[in-house]
Image (cartoon, rainbow, N blue to C red; front, side, top):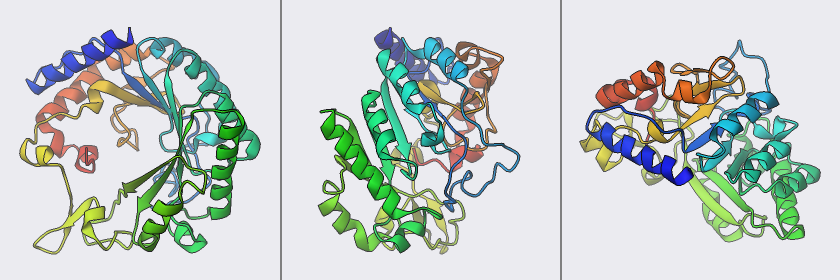
Length: 322
């Protein structure tokens, strides 16, 4: 069923290139938000900056997760356990991952590792988790805390070590990915990180450009070399988002993610993608509908059609570099 669902997804996306919205498949991947809050105050994160002021700290209810898993377990190929909040703050995260793994889903977690104890690392490895992304954006406390405000570099590094030890102890094939944002505050450390990431316990290293919100007139976190930034300086002296050749010259190319996957928040809201951080374009709630009903529903298809016709004018799409 996964293969058939993926082929149906590709066909639906091909039709979208012709301006047709016809979606009969289910998402090929889902991003699940186990918890909608975080311990840190990262300057470019709505959760870290407490932009969602009216939202209370919530965990995704297990009954909502179980129902979702029943609906996508046979058709999706991947389940990501992260969106905006810190996933390790959900007390039942390892059993949730184990349930997804048991039905054959490729599972991924992304964490700041502040809550990653030796016991939790062991439970995550034993759950069958395929990949865990550990975000560390500086390897001195000052450079680390420049972005991960309120965080401890020591805790993050200890979390990496715990994961590596559990991986070896259980002879697991889990990918431990060290993810580093390219920032001006850590650019003098990039070469050191390349040489030493395996010694720190990671099996893979990924550098990632940073999404910045107030970038038009430059930003203190923007790397000195524009090659490593999402933003380029214009002739007028301001900055703009750097897009791929296709996005620049074929502006009506719809985003594949709207046809291939979606985000499920801790509250059970279904969002079109990870750039809808404020939930402005929600398709509806799983507490009142099935995922299929929302995914095939009027709101979802209207948004897809809007992206086809006016993608570059939609606020969340303007900030997207995909």
